[in-house]
Image 1 (cartoon, helix red, strand yellow):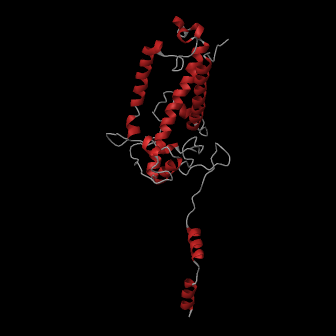
Image 2 (cartoon, helix red, strand yellow; image 1 turned 180 degrees about the vertical axis):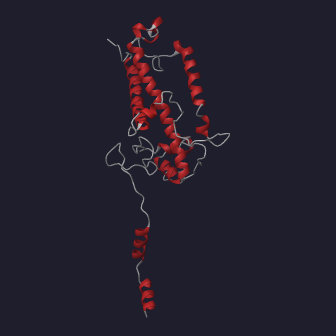
Image 3 (spheres, one colour; image 1 turned 30 degrees about the vertical axis):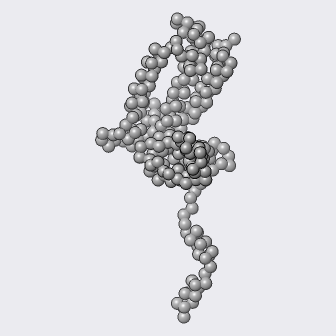
Length: 255
């Protein structure tokens, strides 16, 4: 009799109740609030494990990266087959980019974020050097030999101000940059001749001649600080270029 009652109970249980019970047992994905803007939810792939991860990728630009080991997923989305799909060489739709990131495996997502973080660090470091060089060149132009900034009316020698007079020097800078870039080719493109001894950390070139990492307090997150300063420098150097390109006056030392 007890077995018959149990069978009747299972038979008359509503599908909604069964669905609720199944849903209650299923693990729920924890969503993280983005720190760059209150009330915004960070994408699932930005889980806060990377240094200085503010959960900021509203345009899902991470999907544009296709490093070695990541499959080029052909996904369905709302505007698939439109004329822009034929003209654009990249994923132009936000819905498509979100679908691409959802289709990538955890390993592919890790490779994607490592690729994007390495690119961010390279641009950050270049921007920090540019901000210092730009400022010093204009502030000290009166003491520079050979009147070096006379060709640009006292402005820093950048693309918007004219570079033709500095072409030989720029070739030397390009050669130095190419040498530095070659040091990370194997780690970025996964072209190792033998398995690496250490795990790849994006942007880590093993350059610390003064051993500063060991001298800083343990609670000081220098990896995050580097990225924060780099992001600020990228904004600053962009502002320098726009201001001098529009007004034609040096930012520092102008009268």
